[in-house]
Image (cartoon, rainbow, N blue to C red; front, side, top):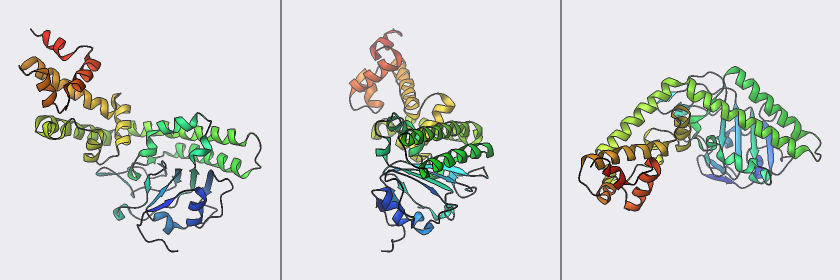
Length: 308
């Protein structure tokens, strides 16, 4: 049956994905490495919007000029890594990003393959699995060599005769791949300072506007999702970038801004603690008191008493 272009398609198993992409059945039901150089892929099906019940890690050899970061285009000419967690929407939703580029290597990984291994928990801590497609990891030439070599090791192991050590070896190789990806993502945040600083400046303006107009009363404390959406980033990418550049994630920065405004109101007005909490967007003053005490080691009343 021909897939309708841009219809949302769900693949419940790696085998279903292989069939849809015109690939031979996977050698293992819970993990597959697709070498796009030697195995032709149905690129048209790949471009359709789809959801997988498994992880996807893909290396594309040339993505320059095809993907954007907020309002900016990427400034790398080489390849990159893209990641997707289970149940994440994948596909070209924006035709302005240009034609799809086939992956040279793609790993499809069912969460069940990680059962009983620490990686089953660790993999959920890597925020880049929740990044948007236009937040791909661009690789420097030496980084590409490292990543490709790991893909080749995994490919060789999966295509070899399975023995009692095979599973452990592949898990170790996956851990190595993800560790390098995490390292290179942090490098990208640092080396692309002009873009990162632009995001920080826009975030500062966004927070200032939010805290000086009526948004606090009408919408409550700003959420990470709200800030990310207004900065054209995914929440995970924004938090990881901020953590690398400032040592704090987005939620921590929001809380710092809330506490800063609270200190100002407690020290310069006669508003009650309840009124201050309400003015800052808290529905319940207990939540405000708990946050204030956590951030300052003082209750709002104890902080105010310092000025009397």
